[in-house]
Structures are given as structure tokens and as C-alpha cells.
Amino acid sequence: MTQPIFILSDHTGITVEALAKALLGQFDGADAHCAVYPFLDTPDKVADIIRKINQVGQTQKTQPLVYSSMVDEALRTQLLSCQARVFDIFDTFLPALSQSLHLPSGSHVGRAHGMGDSATYDQRVAAVNFALQFDDGGRIKGLEQADLILIGVSRSGKTPTCLYMAMQYKVCAANYPLTEDDLNSESLPAPLRPLRAKLIGLDITPDRLHHIREERRAGSSYADLAQCRRETKAAKALYGTHDIPYISSTDYSIEELATAILQLRKVARVVQ
Amino acid sequence: MTQPIFILSDHTGITVEALAKALLGQFDGADAHCAVYPFLDTPDKVADIIRKINQVGQTQKTQPLVYSSMVDEALRTQLLSCQARVFDIFDTFLPALSQSLHLPSGSHVGRAHGMGDSATYDQRVAAVNFALQFDDGGRIKGLEQADLILIGVSRSGKTPTCLYMAMQYKVCAANYPLTEDDLNSESLPAPLRPLRAKLIGLDITPDRLHHIREERRAGSSYADLAQCRRETKAAKALYGTHDIPYISSTDYSIEELATAILQLRKVARVVQ
Picture 1 (cartoon, rainbow over the protein chains, first blue to last red):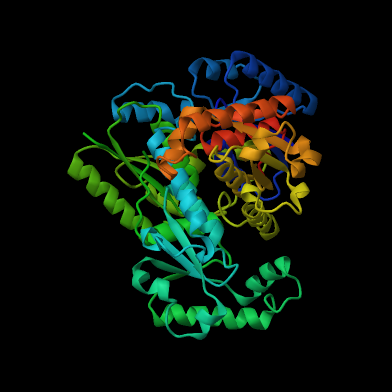
Picture 2: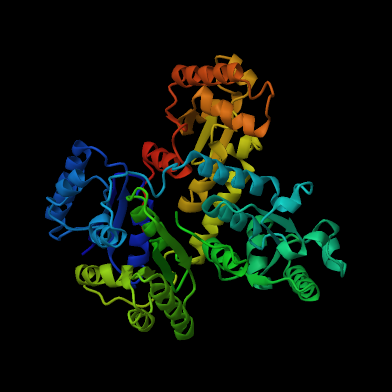
């Protein structure tokens, strides 16, 4: 019996989608169908989704679960009339926060993933553009403006990690690939030498690198396991010689790498 | 009196950081300091943060608030001994979910933002690489493999939106800039003609475009307000002539645009 789960929001639904993912991840073999319905921002749209929820519950003879983030109190109240167990993040957490802050809560739709202050938002987009410009050693001039610089062999995970840090945390992250020539030398590539304090290395196992490169250029010498072994070994030696902190990307997601790098660099994650 | 708020996690803390941001966004002029502490995954690390929380509470003579996502039950119980109001997302939501699913919950750290299934993860990275390759009309061959193609004038928000959709939703999103030549013609650019069903236009007000372009190339004819007016008007006319759905990026964040585009294209957001 598949448990229907509805993720509802009067805005993007991104927060409550992440919450549902974290919760569902705690159950192995859960038979659930969980889908997100964003922008339910009028009584008509809420009425439509209530009809759908009730219909699914009746057809499947099971009570649906609803996780919602409805800022608008009237819409939230309306939603409560559906035949489902409803957990709204604002209903759950706002009263205590309001008490602690000695403030009444407003009804501000879209504060989590909206544009917010447009200057701050522009900084985020500027950080993404910075990461794109300084991707893969594409630009050297201005590299010193980077908050941090990821280095590593080709396909060790530098690009997506930089883009994520830029997008989520407004961090100007550059990345610079360690080429064959760099790895054969004992010294750091010239553009990186004055910027050693900003460097973070990515390490990866030869097997994982081989797998990733094979997806890209199957059978190439670039993807060859022995080549991957040589490059990763030389990169790690370089990090050691120059005392560059490094993190393994082998078993880590973009989000985990970004979190670990910000922690390593003591970049505070302050929620505003 | 600044209210101290601690965001704690035994993993990345990204989910509970988004939750805190959504909650705090409901209070205008809230005087709070809210910071994230990730990877609190050992009793020692939890003991350290408890000491810090208690110290802050004593020094500031106010009870701190804690929002946490601690999957490990023992660490969660340990955390409850701190002198703060603690709201853990697993404590709050897991019991009802467990009941509905007729399953006990496990203790799987990192299911929300970890690597998960490595094939699925590789698809995400592949989608990011796709978005990078097919950015700004950089590549035409293979464009038909895109799930969707954003079109618009230079600096209308195409690139970050494509990257976000790729990173979060594994959507292979390409983007194609409408150049002066394209805009002077009544027909669609040749590479886009067979792919009309995949196109989504971005619209932007001349003022906002002017502001963004000025940041990039101040005083240039590219950033000139009259030029911005001509281009945005011609782009909108093109969308109308060819019946291409379009969205305004003027007041919308990357996340809002991505949400709206996926909804427009009926791409289901299924949480797995």
C-alpha cells in the first residue's frame, strides 16, 4: 500500500521538499509517493489541491500525509480542512519563535527562496558569474579576488562544488585544474603561488576518477586507471609538499564538500 | 537584546538552515543572531556545542533557541540536556511518519544532502556539465538532448537558472542568447526552430536589465537604457509571434524561476 505524501507550499516549496527528503530518508524500503505542489497561493488553488488529496485518500483507502509551508494563515486554515494529516512548518515552529523574539509574526510569502534584498541577491548572481569565469583555470587575471580556490585533477569535482558555494553562500570560489605538467613539477603552478592561503585540494580515489572519466571519454588514455592512479598520487603529494588542506570528493556530494570547505575555511554560515 | 539561535546538524545542516531562514523571514526587525554548525557527529562535538550554547545563554541572560537535525538518537538525547529550547526536525516529524508508513525509522545520517545512490548522483553532475556546455549558445550539436531551453536577451537570468535546475533537479537545461541579429529577424534562430516545444523565454524590464548591465559594463552602449528597451521589446514580440511561453525574471530569484519553469513544463518534483 503506497503512502501518498503531498508537499504543499504557497511559494517554491524548496524548504519543505528538503525536509520531506530528510524524513523519508530515515525509512528503508518505504512505499511512499511524495510529490511537490508549489505556488498554491490562492483559495481556488488550495481548494483544488484539497479535492485532489481527498480523492487520493478515498481511492487508495489510506490517509494521505501533507507537509506544507503555507505562510498565509487563511490558506493554512483552509488546508487544514482536508482529509489528511497536515504538518505545516509555520504552525509547528512559529509560536515558540514569536515568543522568544517578543514579536508577532508577519505573513511574508517567499522569504526563504525569494529575491529578498535585491543588492544581496545581485551578489549571489555575481558570485555565480565569478565561479563561471574562474572555472577550470579559464581566467588568471583577478584570481586574487577569489574567497577560495579549489585545486585538483580533472574531474575531481571542482566545478559543481564552486558553483554550489557561489549559488547558496555568495562565496566567490575559483577552481584551477592540476595538469600533467603541474603534477610533474614539484612547485605550485605559478598563478597559485602567491595565493597559497586560499587553496583547498580535492582528492579522489583512482577507481572513482577512472569511473567518472570513462563516462566522459571511454577507453581514452585520459580515463585509463593507471593514469588516474598517477595523477591522484601526484596531486596528493603536491598538497603534502605545500601544506595545502585537502578533502576527498570520492564519497561526498556537492553539498557535503561545500559544507566541509566552508567549515575548513571558517566561513560563517549566518542566517539572515 | 539579541536572541541567539543555533542551527545544529550531524550532517550538512542545509535543510534546517533553510527552515530557520523561512521562519526568521516571518519577523520584521527581529534582533537575532543565527548561525549554522554542521557535522556535529560525535559526543565530543555535541558536548562542545552544548558548552557554547550554555555560555552564550548565561552571558546574554537569555535562553537560546536551537533548531537541529540530528539523525543519531543518542546525540539528539545528549543535545536535549543543553539550557536552550531545542526543536529537532526528526523528533518533531518522525513519529507520525513512522506510524503512517508502518515502519520503524532508521538512523541514516546524510540522506537529505549526501551522495545517495551514486548513479543518481552522477546524473546530477552530468546535468550540471550539460548546462555548462550548452550555456549561452556555446554548443549547438546535441542541443536536442536538452529537457528544456531558456532563451532571452543577454543578462536576463538564463545561466544561473539553468545551473540551479541542473544541480537540484537533474534537469538538462540549455540556454541560448537572443542576439541583436536574432531580434531584428522575425524568425527564430535556426538551431531553435526544430525545438520550439522545448523553449521558454525570459522577460525582464528595461530598467532592471539596464541596472544589471551597468554593473558589468558601465556606460557601454550594451548597458544603455534605450538599447535595453529595444532588446526586451523585440524579445517579447518574438515570444508572441512564435507562441513561446515566457516568465519575467525581474522580481524573481533563481529558485522562483526554476520552480515556475518546472511547473510550466509539467516536470514533476518527486521526492525519493
